[in-house]
Image (tube, rainbow, N blue to C red; front, side, top):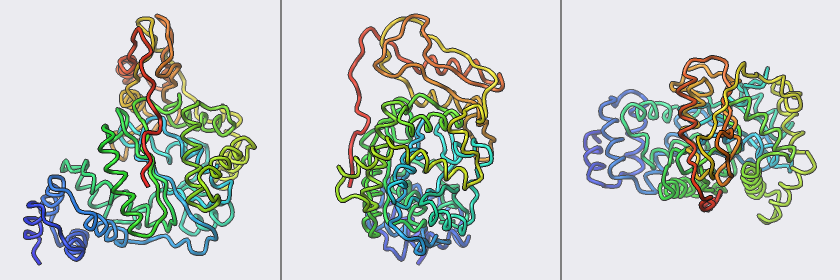
Length: 434
């Protein structure tokens, strides 16, 4: 077969066979197919899409392009949780310990911040001494011991995806839903999981701005999981305002600790409990979803989820005292208050602007090799629906350097929309798929 013929057929909307998908992916991975031809194929996919069979074949091919993690020696049902990325989203630090405290095995292979969205690894690495570069053997042993471990993605897992993602990043083909779905699921399925809970964000602070697009992505990933005989569910959740009040790595660890002690924000607590419940249900620790919700709530109230997180921190080299003594975490040197220009109700908070402002002062990355400042970030003082006085504090910006501070402060002020009436409350969990 010839690459140009496959590009031509995909451009015209034809379905390619699994063998033809394998030919393209393996050929590109072996550098037998040049960048310009694979770029043309990716653009054709952007315009004409892919069928369910094609998406599954692409996922399967990338999944088997490198090493897969064998967790068969770890007893129990293995369930992971994946978020498509948001602002202030620290639910992994809460839902995973709650689920693990019920006996579900939770192998968390997480990513880093890029752009305006946060990364679980950066949050964890703000804890002094915490190691995310576990070996596979260490990862397996910790799962046997604690039922929960956090580690970074390794280059050996789904290398074809890494190579294709780098090309997508520079050819304006990132937004293709079939390519996003296969990219996420190839890495997740390489972890040796039995089940996956997906949190697909939509709104201003999410990659998917429209609920319709978030639904399409969720449906595509759920279909892939089912075709590969995995237990899988997806929640579509709102990201039109940041989740919780804290944005920034050490600040989010503090808020996760408060939430695990049942003293966290209402929205963060509610979503974390629902994600944990679905992990518990897919992990077969509960017979019904309602029973799973009760178990998640119980592990929050009795502190066992909090203690599980402390055990994980200690085992991975961190100082578990940080969950009680926040002064042991990296702390910013200065703070700036962002005040409201007028009285009224907060009707919207642009999550992307808040995330961009936080990244601008060092909490995130614009390039993969940028260094993150774990101490900096933003603490919101009000959320959508609350009233604020003229001159009242909307948010506090915590910084260690003044570079970009004025621009970041301006972004935060512009992110808050103040009106004379409160407006309608928006649901946090918009849909469930699967």
